[in-house]
Length: 503
Ligand code: NAD
Image (cartoon, rainbow, N blue to C red; front, side, top):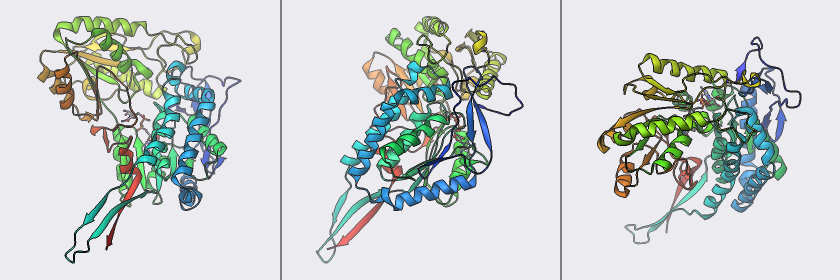
């Protein structure tokens, strides 16, 4: 957590930039009534960004009540066109205030602005536009049913909003992943209560201003800040007024939320952790494979759920691949978000830095060879208070080593040679997770054959992170429950009522 007690020695607040967060409940900003808050520190240099109020049961209750009132009130009475026009305006307003969103996201996460300006913020806006197109064009089914008296019946389906949706989101792509849920939820007529990650409160707060500016009715979009267990996260997912819970985060947290959702039998949609493999065949275009693997391992400092932590390379090109990825890793420049030359930012927090470094240590004790990295970089004094780690590559670990089995969520990968296609497929699928895979080959038949055998929600061939928002997104095995994206979002965000009319 980016959350530190007051006792810990930390840097001073930068004079110009103190940014406090606020809950957004029923269209109004509030600090709530718990009297509790925490300090949000910059992952770049450890300076104080601002304070974040911790919501309790009262704030969650007020937000759910506001969401219910909007559902039964102005939002519920709008036509699809009125609703989608407003959501289009939300997207436009995010783009108009692009620089503010970019600044807020980079403050919280420390990620390079060059990355956030072409992924986080534009996708955050696009998530509001994309689903309005789906909602406006999708129909429902109708069956003509014969009956013994010969007159028949008509069966048709009505899709209705599920209700009040609880959205629990993570810190790695805060605005993008939160709006990936809020966009379809609102487009399909629901209202939401969002509990953003405690690490990254700012863009969710800022979005409240946007909602008010464009005239989204009060209570449609609510934000309650807080932690997970025994705090706003748990209270929201336990709340009987919440009709469905959509969550992105760790598999372990998903298990806790599923238990909480069991009270009242509330449906869940889960996008969870991964331990994703890349398979690089000797017939791959090596330049493409290196470029793609550099991104899939090191982008966002390795804090991407779809990122690659296991790389399997066909033996004839193994040495070359390792040498080239090493050179790429060593060329990444550390720096502040606003510096265009920055190639890699810090991890999200000191706590996460400790977790990643514990895997760096474990890799060595378990017998892996460090090809590059493995520790904390030496940086100028102004960055030394941040949560930096070196981009790291290992070879030679056993297939059951912790760095092969467990999600690390840092800028690191293990590279292992393979000899046959069957072996590569077996190794890639030998994990409890099933989120993503990347296959690198110029052999068309092999590409399709291998992709069809990957036990994952998304398999890229000769690319990585290329996303069409109309496609199904989600994870197999321990990486998730359900799919969202395009028409697949209808499944979770609506209830179907079948109307049977005897003629
Ligand atoms: P996390 O599970 O620690 O936290 C996610 C959210 O859950 C936070 O808002 C947190 O406060 C909340 N939470 C924690 N305990 C809770 C509880 N008991 N009840 C209710 N809410 C609770 O995850 P993180 O560290 O923020 O994010 C990193 C993880 O997210 C990684 O495992 C990554 O793979 C995963 N992730 C998955 C996807 C995907 O699409 N599959 C996308 C991004 C991140």
